[in-house]
Image (cartoon, rainbow, N blue to C red; front, top):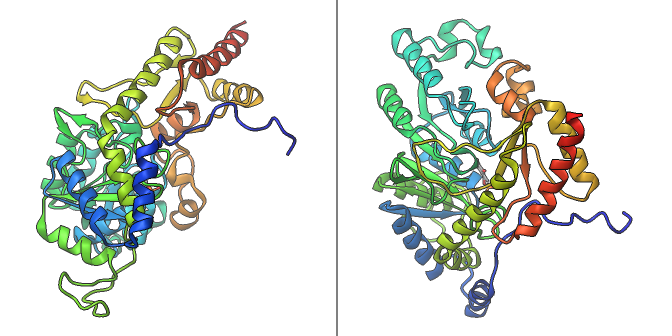
Length: 405
Ligand SMILES: *Cc1c(COP(=O)(O)O)cnc(C)c1O
């Protein structure tokens, strides 16, 4: 491409300092690159930060979700309740575990699972094993009830979308009544709190992710936390080719995976975790700069924080516009000025694989679909400056004032 197409500021950026570089270099010099002291140290640090009894480092957030489903007892054919307004990994992990995602539409303010719709789903399942039609994949709607394996819900998997915790009181009480597990997809919410207690501390298991665009990074990596010693033991075995705690290296107790986290990632993670409160504070500052500049624009709705979110850890900064065409215009104008932005999120049920496999069509989950059509994630990271934010907001203001005339 011709020069000058580079974005002026990145969509997201890791925050890496000299301590991270030193830590990773030290691991390289040590000769122990996997299953060593840094993984143990990072796991202890994460368990203590979240307030969980156990933490298990894995190769990614996605692999953590996959293993959590298996370790929490979800079996092929089980339903797993989740939302279609998320990064695709939360639903893909359900498919990889052989389960069927049972989508529930979202609360328009937060984008998280709608507690009222979740209650309706639960009432349906408990009353007569009948799952509300709109949650059920169209391809299953046509099957006789007896062949839908109705009522066998293996888990509820709420996503704390954009960093804001889902309504965990409702999720946990629903799961208790359904007698199923709760697995938190906390991949976007490290450090957030719901009613004074950390995200990741509510479910039977919770998963964090450390891809470079998250609040803290290990390059690639993830972490599962749990208070359950059995889940912990199964996770450790599954991530390490099914080996038992005392197995010989080539003896395998169960069908496992290689989902291990390297020592390089773990050492990086320990340094990032020690800086996490600063990283989160820097992101909150950037979110504040955006909201100051955008709140008074009539076609823009800035993110709203639920009263139950007692502490917010910002993953992305996502605004909503008055219509899809305004969103489209802003996106194009930003792009013409070499400023990136991204639709967060295109709904999962309309992604190709889900349409082909389950028969979903537009209209299945209207709230999620509407959010997807009017939302836009703006460039966001802890290293962004106030003048970077000005650059983005000035273009938006210009576009929107043109639109009003
Ligand atoms: C980032 C993310 C994941 C997966 O993380 P990876 O480490 O990229 O596999 C899962 N769910 C949500 C909601 C995420 O944002």
